[in-house]
Length: 174
Image (cartoon, rainbow, N blue to C red; front, top):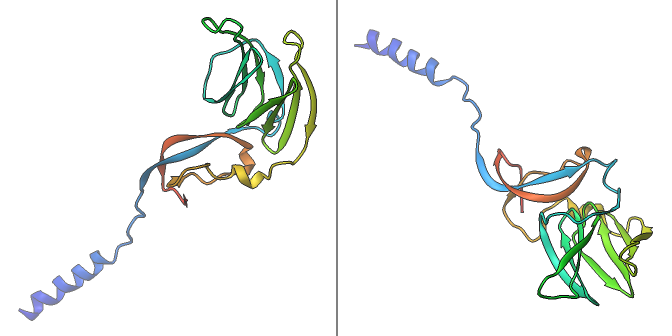
């Protein structure tokens, strides 16, 4: 009996010592959508476009302004409230918030604050940029969210927004 038991025990020990492969986990969470650093601060006044990620909406005189998170600000003519018309889109990558006072539109552009004169809708003009008003660290984490997220990689550029996704082996949690 001992002669049979010893080889069985040795075989069990050899096969039980094999390396285990690391397991892959999948979690629902948020992943960043990047824009290159070369394109992050390009501002443009464009023709109206469709809403992608509508955010804050505010009124100014007969205008409705709608922030499109990460994309820019839509401007609509609301002089006929039954039929508002899109009249312009100001592309401001990384925008999260905007405000207006005395015909000047103020918005965040990643780390900077930018200003546009919108007093003449047929000739919207960029006025000024104040650099490094907002700390970069603010965009490295999804705002107002808890749970798993893909860790930010600043070598990929700036983060436009965060999108829901299935993450593989996520390392960041909040």
